[in-house]
Length: 416
Image (tube, rainbow, N blue to C red; front, side, top):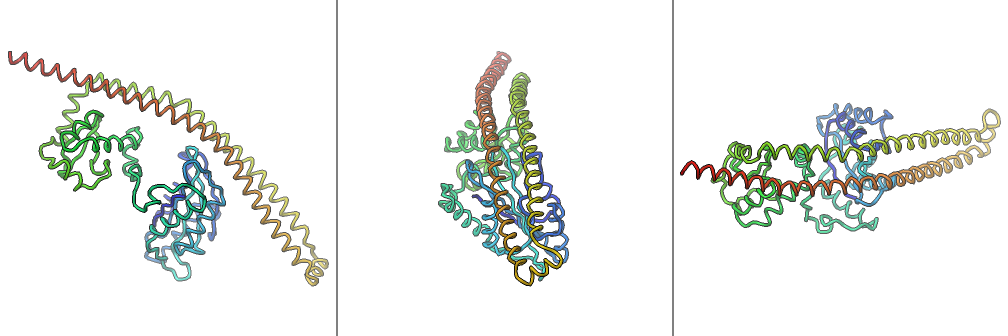
């Protein structure tokens, strides 16, 4: 599985994010180890409190565990991966929390460790943790028999579709998949060998090349949002400059915004709004089905948990009743019967815990099968909507051509 880790602070913010049920179908606290508190917010606040005895600002290490797209990892898979990462990073025995998320038909996990050694009252150093996690990630893929991604197979060919958080959030605010935006810029770049070709290729898809405030190349969409060319093509600034030359002959951002406003008529903006409204209406039935499915799955898991909890209490009482008390209990201790019974109880408790874990995994796999079918329908609809947007681009270019011809005709009329 893909492992991504970081040192960080912000206990409350992290706990809020990890327990967020708004953006996740299901959130399960799989493990809280080494904390006094029995809930995540309290556990991470304990870590923050202990860090106050040090000068460490990034007192936690956060790790995400992401299995391949079509694999549903079990709870034990996540526990094993966390144990191996802990050993690799030198965090053995440190308090940790493991949280499992399910979203869009996929299951992944987050692990949070305290970096503060409570005995020494100092932060544990984590040198070269990115390299260590990369090596462990590769081992996990091989151990499970999963096909290695290109990035892990070659240790360097980073997928161009791996975005930074900033890129993702900017695109998400526009309501368009960032992969769609990034591919637009990259394909335009591949099609051209100089600045004019790149400019025309971008304009075919509704982006306009301009000179940025810091003399770099940027592009604007029809709503005036600015995109840095180097960032969205996945290149370095010097590579962009080598191919496109100087941006000095391009209009400024403000001038480009004025040009866009003159090109995009109110009629075309109305078409944009109609398409957005229609796409939103088309998605609403699937969103309603998603909400109903999530509610039903959560209720089913709660009933299942309540049943398991009740059975665990009954089984624990049965095991406890095997241990005699009073004079008979004293006699059992003298003869060794008490110790043998304790050992038997421990073995049974472990077997019951593993049984419960497997039953939870079976329930999750069954529910995720339903969720993936719904997600497939989401993808099919969004694919059709992307086709709608492509057809609109053709209409927009035609309208711009008409407006341009009319403008030229007016100028010629004035000259006459």
